[in-house]
Length: 255
Image 1 (cartoon, one colour):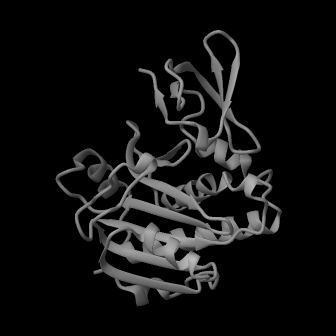
Image 2 (cartoon, rainbow, N blue to C red):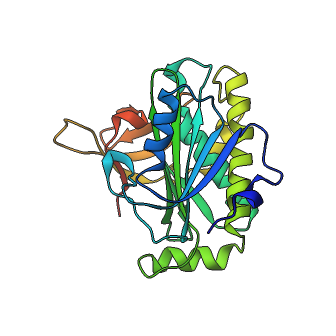
């Protein structure tokens, strides 16, 4: 089982509490309940297995016990809620920085996936849920080989050799650094926008965007991410579509 004491060594003091449990339904649900009870930001809850873990659109997300790093954190941004859409992107960039430094071939799929290897296999995802005054960020990252994810596991095993405790600590420290700077700067991403653009593998791809309530998907080229964290897609007709993470059901590469 993941050793919480090892994670706490050299952990950024922003993280005021860290708990590791063998099993829970969903760490996001646990932290949302804590947020509702008034728990201050900086809480981290880690689970070796989630029986009701999920990704975007309430899709089930499950991995064998001890094969992943699965955790949720509690944030209470001081910036306007209109800028909270940057939080999943900021989180992805923090993870990207850690894996890149560890030697992984890593890219981010806008808005919330982490991908590895030249074939860009998904190895992790990010789920953010907001309340009136808090944001819960859930992160799941496959870290050890298992039969259900052979391609991804092979990429992970060959691209970094890091203990899960060290991986979790590095991600938390990277996220604290990125988040605190963003929050102190009133939610501005001007200083890291170029870094996100460089990390985002969606930019430059021909994509299909499926919007809620719209029958026909939009086909075009994803050419940029703007200062509000929205994806900019040039339609085949030449018109531009600008979409936020909350507006999109799917963004998929067109082969």
